Image 1: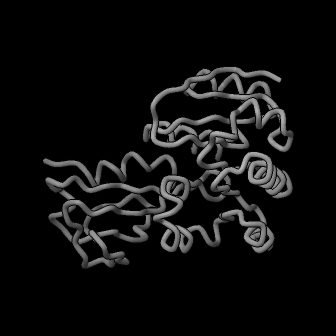
Image 2: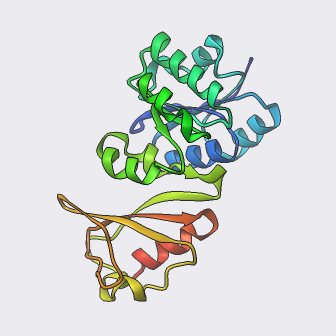
Length: 232
C-alpha cells in the first residue's frame, strides 16, 4: 500500500476516482481545475507516479475493490465515488464497496458494455456509457454536475465539456452556430439558458451567460473553448 501524494484544502467537493488510466486521469485533471479535491486509486505503480507528478492530488496505489485502499483514499469523506476502469466487474464491486462500507452519497461508474447498465442502475449506481451519456447529461445535469459534464467517452478519445459564455458576451454571440467554425467532429449538444434547456440548430445564436454542452475530441477542447468565449 502506498500513498504517493496528498493535498488537502478548502475545495468544492471531494471525489475519489477508481482507475488512473486515460479516462481517470482526464477526469481528475478537469475536476481539480474546477477547484475540487480529488483522490485516485490505481493498481499500476508507474501510472500512480505519473499522476502524482502531474497533478496536485492524493494518489493511492492499490485495488479499489479492496476496503483498505478505499480507507487509504478516505472514501468515507467523499461526496462522489467514480469507478472508471476498463473492467465493468471491478467498477461495480468498487462502487458497491463505497456505498455499503462508507455510505458515499453518490457513486458513478463507467460501463464499457451497455448491456450491463441495467445491473448498475438496479444497484443504485449512476451508469455511464458512450451510448447513453448525452441523455444522462440532460436528464441528470443538476444532480451529477461536473462528473457527467467532464466524463470522457470511447475510452478517452472524446469528452463532453461544459463551456460558459461570459456574461459580457463573446464573438460567438454575434453569428449563427453554423458560422462559428467549430472543430471537425465537435457537436453542440444543448444550451442551458436560465431555466431553459435548448437543442441548438445552425440558425440559432448563442447569448451572453449561456452554458453550452458539447461533445468534442480531447485535442480540440481548448480550441472549442476559445471559439465560444474569446472577444475581439
